Image (cartoon, rainbow, N blue to C red; front, side):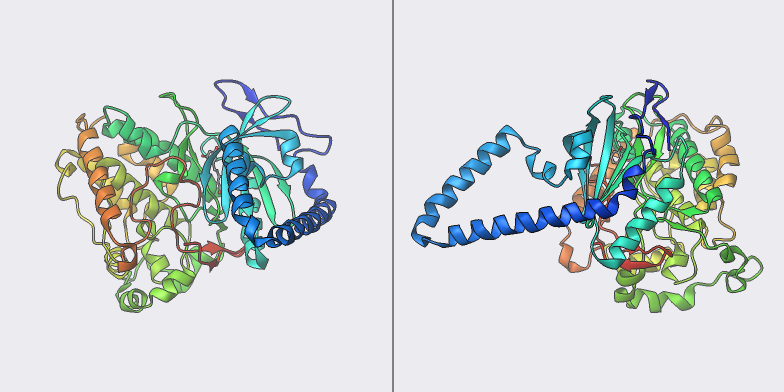
Length: 448
Ligand code: PIT
């Protein structure tokens, strides 16, 4: 796979080896053996060190102290040493690991530089544990290998070992969507439409390909570079799956003529939090009602999430914002959101219609990505909308939410991940979410 990174700078990928970027995958077996040998060796060394330090307990205090100060010194000299050590020599032979830029429960993302071409990249290190972890990782890889679009993160190459996978990705340095909104002094509807056009375009591409992202949220939308004209990129395919062709025609799911009634599922779903945690994918606030109602999910779940993102982008607040999961789920299943409060009075009817068309309970009636791209609000780039600067209200609402969320006690049943994240270094996978999926798109593991 060859791609040109960042058209503006005319950057190119590091040269592939004779067999292309994925040549290393074919050598996984040997690589695994090497790793096992190395691990056995390391374990032996560690055991030996352990036995040594266990002897002479009276000396331990001193040796521990010495060890600690050596570590401290080493860390001060080289603050990246700790996560660098997690990289296989094959990766470090080719890439210079520069800095940690994101971390999650099972992953780390670092900024790296190709040693020969000096091209910058992001490398995502995935810890793969067990069959389910392996399947989830293969699903993520399967999607990343297929995608090629300006508004979707691109994969350059992959290194696999027995317990780790290293994804070499294009490096996005422009920050998260909301970080940029906050950092700017102004934010108008027109600015929102620019961002949403790019996300809708990426989604349209993914959905046409048959990919459902399933974890769309502002933290997974990154600007490629800090400039104003930067493209926006959809990242983090850790929960992505392939759409089942059957779904749209599924008779149990054909609700166009019937009332789309989720009420029977509400209590069941809200009371069975255990089920929600075990089975659901994604971040609670962005979950589509059909996911909560245990209906089959389609690409429409991403469009619901886009509705939530649009609401946040224009107001700095969440459409469904409850302090406990059952209440949040109920609100989502009822479609209970409103345009009350600041700054909704200043927001155009066209923008609200865009949101309404996305936060539609019935997935069959919900706007598709293709339709979103044709919605008058996006097409006109909010030309008929008010030119009001929404920046102050958005920042204030984001700030309010952040302080409310941080004062909530996590053990009191408040919704994890309910803060609207704007922090860099928190991506990817670091926002608590409910589950990860296996290759068939079922969520199988709790990642919170
Ligand atoms: C960047 C910069 C950054 C994070 C990422 C890329 C992460 C990308 C990513 C993560 C995934 C995935 C695909 C891409 O499946 O701060 O250039 O989990």
